[in-house]
Image (cartoon, one colour):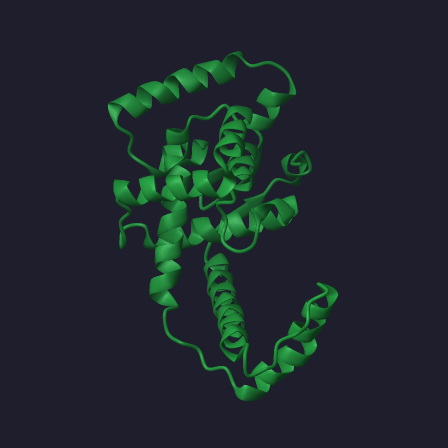
Length: 225
């Protein structure tokens, strides 16, 4: 959350709410306060805190699979990629309030009302406190969708290999009868398209890392669940 203070302009009401939040945190005692202020990394002078990584984990706000399954190091790496992309492109695309509200509603429905509320309480957040994180998520997806929107070529040989080496073992392990290749041709092609696109994104963010100043603070990283 604290890195959002640096990257965004806040309305007067938001500033007031944020001040109350910060004062509450200053009064907090023990390990919770230590972790809240724990600096995990710095990306071109943008701080990444323990709290940032806890929020993106709790609400599955990073690109890719369920963030709950990610180790702390992998979660940080994904978050750094997001920050690098946003820093490069933030002025080129905009996120509307309607998009944020819709994303918040999808998040609430996806987690379920009870789980969503419990995770907000656990982190001391109100739903509107997620706005900055949701804006980042939406903007990142817009950037990737715009930059990597071309259909990538997948050969029939690649589809057949995937069917034999991945799809069939996957279905058998799940106790299901595998469908014929012709039936799942489009599904497998879509999977391979996604994998190729993710590889292109990875290559791009790797290039961005070469031009960025990134510092990792392992002592704080070790404290993350």
